[in-house]
Length: 468
Image 1: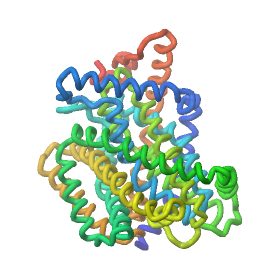
Image 2 (image 1 turned 180 degrees about the vertical axis):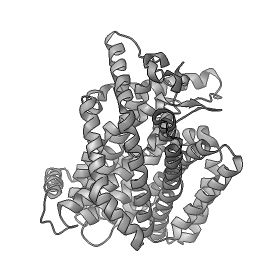
Image 3 (image 1 turned 135 degrees about the vertical axis):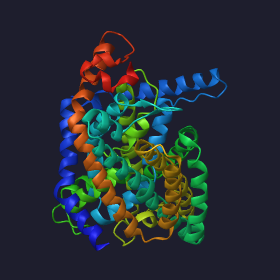
Image 4 (image 1 turned 90 degrees about the vertical axis):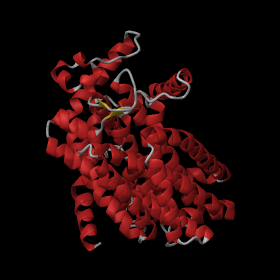
């Protein structure tokens, strides 16, 4: 813990946050703030992709093997919406104060530019797999940057981060919530989670995407409706809460969490954990979607960042701050449970226990897929993938019975290293995503449904043969 905390402090305090925000600002300017200009287009693309997928499934009696844009969106949301939204937000507020929420918003609004670039690149450099397309940072590093060792390094980091470190956080939070509400021993919860996880993850991307497509929208809507109810009964307090969030974000003298520096640090760390913009995770599932132009999925994945942070994370933040107990010494999922219990009674704590199980379990499933696709990038040996699946199950079990500080510290260090690798890659290759955006806009202005062919960018045509 001493070593991990020391590395985290150096990495996050001195350069990673600056690089993350700097890269996001750079791509926001280069794309002329595409993350805001194309908001309407993002929604249209998502709705259309959902309808198209239903039509395709009806046409082949449900045996369609391709992954639609909507399914890819759902899987990425499944990974994003989870512990970070309920426990991560609570931890950020408990340590960094209400101002941490402001910096969560900032990293979502600016970081969504990184999300657009990385997911567009993932589509550009994707390859054909057995059942669906495959791609992600490992692929665009290998074929775009041209450094195989660098690609393998990223593949190892993301497999460790998501399949092992992040999943230990998810199971830890589920175990803590169920113990607090039902008194179920963490060991029992860990065993159940491990068995359920292994059953789902052995089914491949189609089972993962179908599972996420059903569960994620339902659980997210229920949680948002509860939050809207709480906001409604506290509507007169809302202006004061927003003022508190903004003022505390720039309060150098705040006693809560150590002032502006800690608010920024916790807001950005927990915001990145939750929305994954620029982290290099979402591109792995974005690449699996069948679309006519890479920019389409880039825009859809940008919308996923907003869904996660500006909607779901904000719901948790408002619930906690409305309760007024954010500085009472509790943290993590316990703080969220206590806040909901104060607002709506004992049913609130029960709802959180059930919600965190669904949120975090779908995150475990989504996280595993990021690891699987990168393990397959490194090697096609079946036994290696089976060993990885067992390792994922083991970390789900270990996380359930470990200390909260340990699993979060482990997640922070692996997340930071992975994000750094990805940001360097998208800075090198970002010019191609910008060319794709210009091509997309040009076709839209001429009244076409944008399509892409590898010959559009001839200098990389031999690296993007999937688009021949």
